[in-house]
Every structure is written in structure tokens, then in C-alpha cells.
Amino acid sequence: MDRQGNTYTFLYASVLVVVVAALLAFVSQTLKPIQQKNIEVAKKIDILKSVNIASTPKDAEEKYEKYIGNNSFVLNYDGKKVEGDAFTVSLEKELKKPAKDRLYPLFISNIDGGKKYIIPVRGKGLWGPIWGYVSLNEDKKTIYGATFGHKGETPGLGAEIEKEPFQKQFAGKTIFDDKGDFTSIKVEKGHNTSNDPHAVDAISGGTITSKGVQAMLQDCLSGYKKFLKE
Image 1 (cartoon, helix red, strand yellow):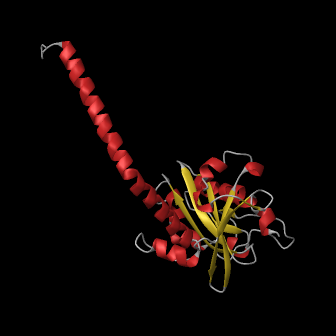
Image 2 (cartoon, rainbow, N blue to C red):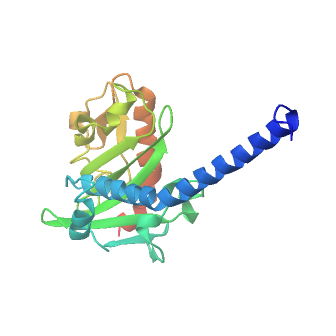
Image 3 (cartoon, helix red, strand yellow):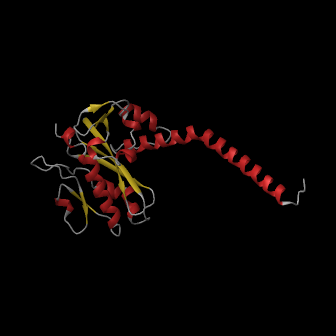
């Protein structure tokens, strides 16, 4: 075959593409279990952080087993336990369903003198998805801790939701009023949030992300109302 001809060039390029694709597929399949493990560990770190337990990739699994273990379950919209594994429920998929058809994962930690109910949340920021975990005290209405993450919010602005000063504001706030009505948590500027048990201060320059956190909490926490009011 003429190595200078178009046929040879086409065949050579085709074989090269197939070989490279096969190698990439092999590497992807080989690394998939490791990647999945890293995702699981990162999730455990976030869950623990919501109850103020610091952990690292090295000790996250040990601490998760100690403070939470198998103490988790899945709820339906009526607040009843249903079959399923709370750890593997995908909020991204569930939030595409009507609220009444969703699965609601719940984690429980016995720490600091009582039960803490940990609720995962997910929503939209300015540039992409935002997510987190909110833990409630045994009264099922007072926030014990909260942690949030993001995919692409602006550093120094919306990305501040993952920083401790913003997250610490949530501790002690309540998601129900004195009448037992669900209020969630407002995230806003220009309001005396220190005297408001249902509000925290928004991020300066991060209005859209702050509103995204507020909408995320309203949407996700409201699905647990019936369970929390029992």
C-alpha cells in the first residue's frame, strides 16, 4: 500500500482512533471503583461536617461508622419510612420529580447529648449546582449545624457559601415558628438577622447564590415537614 496515499492515511488514523479509544475506555473502567470510593468518602466527610465533626479522607469512614453507621433511612412525602438506602439516593434525580413522588434520605447521629437529624439539600447557584447537609437537634426544628458546597460559584462572592463564617450562622436558627408552621430559613441582606430566628445574613456581592441557598432550603426541607412535625 502506498504510504503517501489517502487510503493509507485514512486507515492509519482510523486504527489510531480505535486504539486510543480502547485505552481510554480501559483506564476509565479501571479507575471507576477508585473514583466512586472517593465520591463516597467525600460525601461522608460532608455529612459528618454538618454535625460539627471534622474528618479527613483517611479517617472519614471510621468516624462515619462511629457516629452514624447504619442509622439512616428513606422517607416518603408523608414522613413514613420506605424501602431504600439513604446513602445511595440521588437528590439530583429525586428533585426532578414532583415533591410527593420523591424519596427523602435521612441520617441520624447520636452526639452532643442527643439525636441529630441530618438532611441533604441540593439546588442551583449562579453558575451551577449547590448542595449541602443541614442537621437538626432532637426537637426537629432547631438547626445544629450546616455545610454547603458548590461546583462553580465565584471565588470571594458566591463561593463563600462553603466557608465557615457563612455556615456558622445557621446554628440555632429554627425552621418552624412558634405556631408550628414551616418557615425554612431566609438568606437576605438589609435585615436584622441576629434577632430573627428564621434568617441568616446573605453574602455580600453574592445575591443570586444566596437566593439559591434560600430556595434550596425551602424546596428540600419542606419535603420533611410531616416527619419533623410528628
